[in-house]
Length: 276
Length: 315
Image (cartoon, rainbow over all chains, first blue to last red; front, side):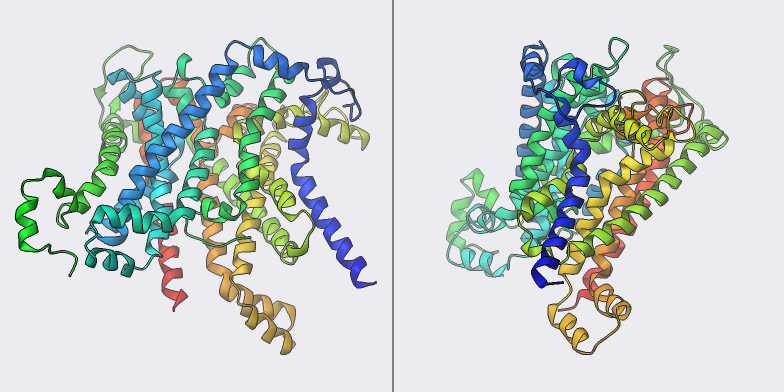
């Protein structure tokens, strides 16, 4: 077999594997362009006349725009707060190494390793007692808190990688610590900030349990709508579900297309660096 | 220590400017840590203590009575509860099988994609491949319910074409568990493939070439060169997946709600349902405390391996 043919065959196999993994998602995206009767056709139709009626329908639902707006504001606000706070803490852990550094890093990580249901029971009681339930600010702060461990871990790894000599040079030349933190270190950890930002965003965007428990009518986001909406009125409204899912999974998919080189850092708490 | 000590003149000057505290080496670490600590105390320490206290109480929201102290009764009740043991063993089996299959397939795919740098449209292909792990389990669970649907699901009609009729994968107690496990494998095999690729990338090219020159058999190349360099990344991947898999809940909730019967009830889901459907908060708190301890053990293992890797990594 010629070298070119072998190479071509190899590439074909790789593409088939990728498409195989994507096929369930592709199927749902396809379904969102079908009419109701096409979706429920037996056997399922591969060839059909596409329609965008489902999307028009979706955007006219009373709660949809609220949910979409909530999903965006909640994830962006929470993650921005988390990153600012985490960057300062990560700088402190990396440069000053306070006595409790290892212990605190451990505690932070263990928060993220807990099953969500175990975390949310006491938080639920606390929110009910303090009257924070069904409040966008309360929810945002909770998500921020949940994004902190991951951000601190990623950012500490990146700051550790920057030689303290940069700090020393700046300080000796009369720069303040403020200058060191924001003008010397911050620009150098840009990849870390991007990775932390993107992967926290995906996490909050995807999270449903916490919002389901400590949120309410005003804080509805799309995963909550998906979880509750699928059980309404007896049967499942598959046109609605497939359309909502398609709209919802688009941002994460675009994110991993554009930020693919941060995928490894993002999926491993910054413990494994590199590109694939 | 050149940086720590401002000139005497400047120090006196600093006393009149409150914000100069921000630049003081003695206070700076505290100031930098304060926001995280505040977050930590409000949203973690207080709830955890609350949880701990509640786990020793009999407290049900449905009874309308205030919590009453019952000592270790909740823990004893959990210990004697066959449902908890059932869901715990079901979860462990889920973890072992799921992570095992995902590791195997992930490594296979990782090796397959090793030489793919010249693949046309590689970035798109990898995006498609990594998509399952980045989607919310709520959405994946939902559309797999659709795919598994016995009458108009895509998979059912494929099975029908193969001559297998009348299967309701999620409705049948014999198959529901495996159907959920299959979705988990679909979601997370790409993650272990990613880790395998990372592990392979950490193998120095020179050593691989040396092994090729020495005509080492493939299994020795695998053992002596590839695993020698890549094992820690791979172990970290497997550990992260184990921890995550132990928490599996959203997916099951969305696909089967733990049913039919309790055949797909995981321990996290059981906690969730006992707390927010049964409103038995004392009992659930006790279970949450136990899961907390298990998670801490997992985390400790993860950090242990991380440090091991750092030590072995050398210069």
